[in-house]
Length: 434
Ligand code: CMC
Image 1 (cartoon, rainbow, N blue to C red):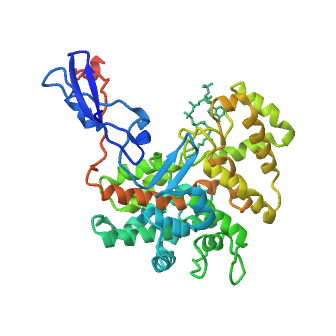
Image 2 (image 1 turned 90 degrees about the horizontal axis):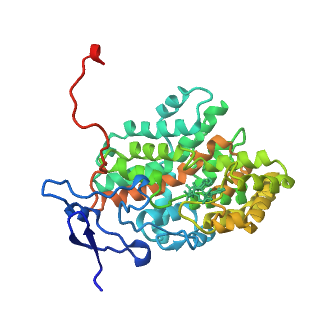
């Protein structure tokens, strides 16, 4: 059987044979090159057929070898490695290397990569001054987006996006400096002095030091908490063509420097439909307030009063594998920080929902946000920092998507078409006649 699709245009009776292209798994990656549709015309002067797909729910915008998701089975892999194995055995910078370059690094390559990231964490002193211009109550994500964009002006050479060496330097700078900017944004809001990076610490350990260090000579986070944050960073590195990855590719496709493109991607992440759901989970758990109130709350969800936050996913129709990892991680964290009553409510909510036909029949399972917010809170992060905590590791994913896009000869400037529904041509009307 040929790998083609035959389309019949019932307006003209014409048939067209369109090739089918596949990815690694034919059952997940079959697509038609949409430009073939342009041949479908009613007359020679026709523009040709377009694919209408708001939200790109059925459009593959690229071929990608970075992340694989099977939403039915609850599988997430970076470069072929299951997320569970990476969370268990790897660390953030090693997984970042894997995501960026395609393979796990040999020991010397990892050492060099870690050294480079660690030694690019300082920011120009003027970044600090720019930061000081924000109001005392500025949202840390707004500060993060602005400061990442501002980095563009400190590294004008970064606009040479076609030079491999130059690109690599910006990648290292960005992965390093986003953690510093994030911590500075938090300290600004608290009126605390900024803490400079400590190169002796791990990526997660240094971030915790920049966040929470006070008068001690050296800040050493509890190893369990440091590891928990590291695991959270691994889980958030990439999630294929989501809204912010798409923003990164789309903005990056006009070839600006990666700082402004990352700022655009972070702006996309800021929205409550993308990076903001874990905050909603926390609000919901606080509103429930007591384990005994859970059944009543579930009833209201079933009546359609509101949705169960942290449940359901556009792609996962099974347990989100990241949520499963976090569910196991949470008790380890709480053993150090003390039990958070919200965790009890979350576990009871999950238990009841997973037994209830409403949720079972709709394939509604906990997603990553169901547990991440409770853990962030236990680690001492205020809610406003949640999207920023997401943006730090996702910077690696965005940069991997950007690099893949720049190296892909099939990619062009992102420029969707439209189906125009406005007026036909009309004459200008002077104000006195309107
Ligand atoms: N609580 C109760 N009912 C739900 C929920 C929920 N959380 N999610 C979906 N449903 C119901 C929905 O009412 C509909 O029922 P019916 O068929 O009777 O009308 C059915 O399930 C399908 O819902 P949908 O809106 O068509 O599903 P979707 O794939 O478009 O939406 C979602 C996915 C994530 C927007 C949605 O599940 C939701 O709103 N969840 C709560 C918010 C949340 O946790 N968001 C975080 C997502 S993960 C973030 C990330 O990976 O970036």
